[in-house]
Image (tube, rainbow, N blue to C red; front, side):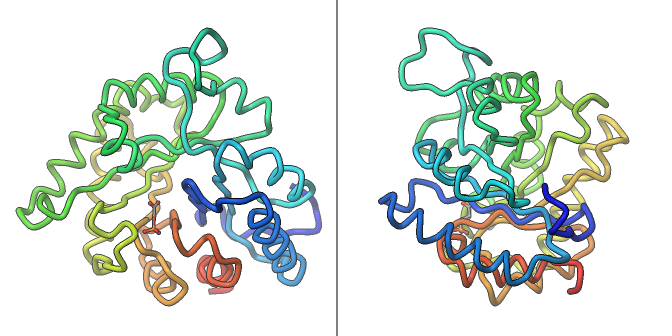
Length: 265
Ligand code: PGA
């Protein structure tokens, strides 16, 4: 962080999950250049901004954004070993911190769905990340079927079980929750702000039962957050920010979302 930028209250987080995008280095370069320009034009009252590019692009993004307040996140990490070893194709928490990455997304519904990541696997990843000093953006959320059968709270309570052994004072500043209803991700459908507020309250209450110090951890909303709905979510006192997929791949729309969570709004 440099002194030429000022941040909003520490309550606000805007995190870009680029997923397996953009496809080319040239597009990444353009996106980051456009974001840098926006940052230069609007340096004040920013929320905490984190970018989660693919592993391949971490290094370029880091280089392009050095001396900026943007933080870097990874989208995944190895749960077998926090440091090193014979795990072909994997990336460790220690390698990530060495690269300047400060956080990692764990429990995203796409990882649960396509890579069969269970609570047990997620707990291993949590252990690796937190033990190396990485912050964790832990995602939870129900499918459409679960939403329609009013099982949202049951599903989320079960997903939060993966976190249970990590709800210690030591990690109280290192865990962020992202509530992402699966049916809202990439679909253009969003729950109402009241629905999101209720779920966030439920998450806060559930965590606080384990450890009162977790009553105030940041809980973000994710799922079809766009420039035109970000302000609505920003109005809820229990929405501490957003995790943005599609709309974070365009500097204009992403910046409008950042502005919705800046201190002046
Ligand atoms: P979306 O993705 O904003 O494209 O819906 C959000 C996410 O998966 O984190």
